[in-house]
Image 1: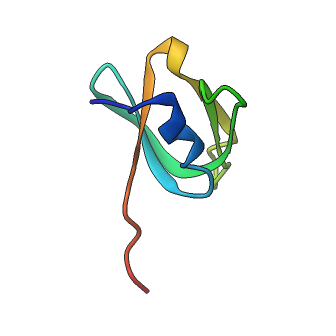
Image 2: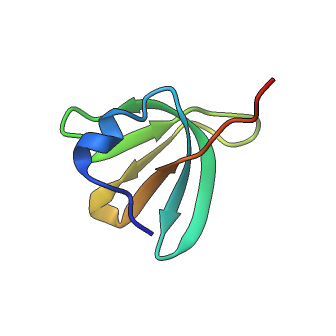
Length: 70
């Protein structure tokens, strides 16, 4: 699984993504914010899952997902 370049993480703000690590899906959610250097992203809290930070340096990757049409 490839999370892409750091520039691509900047383009994920407000979009739904899947967060992966070592080939395992960790979480799906909307990106709330991305760190200035795009080495980390925050997923919005939803339900029982609080807001969470994922960093590329820790081996996480993010892949945008399509939302269903209304």
